[in-house]
Image 1 (tube, rainbow, N blue to C red):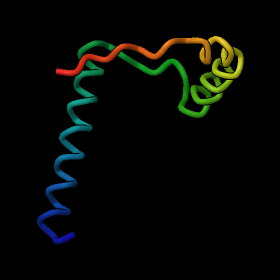
Image 2 (image 1 turned 90 degrees about the vertical axis):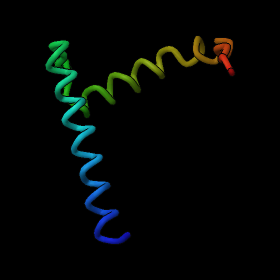
Image 3 (image 1 turned 180 degrees about the vertical axis):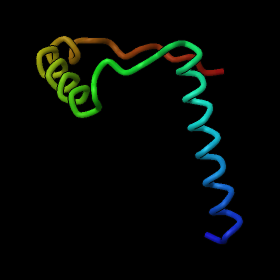
Image 4 (image 1 turned 90 degrees about the horizontal axis):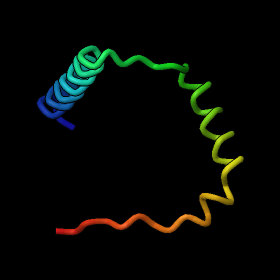
Length: 64
């Protein structure tokens, strides 16, 4: 990647991060769990509900 591409990529990432923070501030969102705890809870839920998940039908998707 050349210097321009690297600078452009960093700028896009920073803009996206700033937008995300601004949006979270606007809706007063804050995490209830730290990332590691959230991953553990998600995995626990998945393992406890694996049979239900396997029985679910795929969601219908809209294609234009």
